[in-house]
Image (cartoon, rainbow, N blue to C red; front, side, top):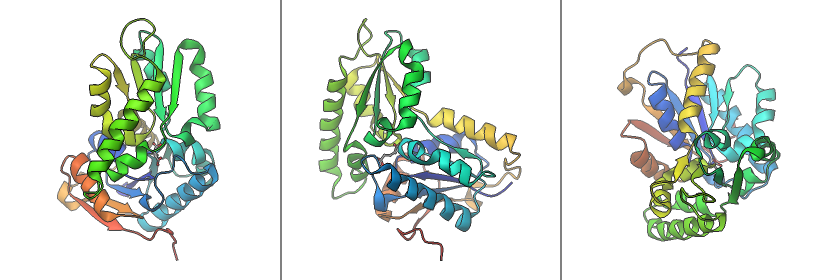
Length: 284
Ligand code: DGL
């Protein structure tokens, strides 16, 4: 099936998932929608995030005839994935959740840090996930207000310098609040990046926390899950296309320049078409 796979996030964070998807599924076409007009989602109400996620799904289905949807955003998944699946029963939908279970398999000290948005950590979905693993390790959960916004701003030339300073400050504050990191007993040896934006500050985090702390993100397992789901639904693309024939389509409801800069920096030089779409995502 030659239709594209839709990938959606509040902003540029989902590009970290798109990168893994491209690698896992090189013969597929992708259309990425960044809702930059309303990013970040993490500090907005669940009802609002759910409404935007539904609008994005409708838009991608109607305008791009997507054959599957990857909600490359933990916050939107927590707010809307259940309703989205009910609304579109024929559409394979892949969501994201903070990688608490994979972190359990990696941690020796049994003390695990979790960074995510306020929306994600305050959701019922996250509460269920946490209670299913809480007896196996000690989890230090930190809502990271402002961090996704600073990462968005770091792509805009006129805001980049201030944004980088803000990222350094927030990362320092939030990791300190979780507790000591390291590989000794009682220290946090594994940190879950529970927001797709945070993957882009991995280096800053690793430098701050030291080489022995393991950072866990979800791009690759999500890409593999998408592959499995497409295979099961017999929707994998069987025609091998040249990349030049199939440039990636990146859409934003907000600032085109920011998305372009982020794609150049983080998408390993693929050819892509960046387009602005109406913030309303209205179909008429
Ligand atoms: N990238 C998103 C996530 O994974 C949302 C960040 C935000 O918009 O606050 O949670």
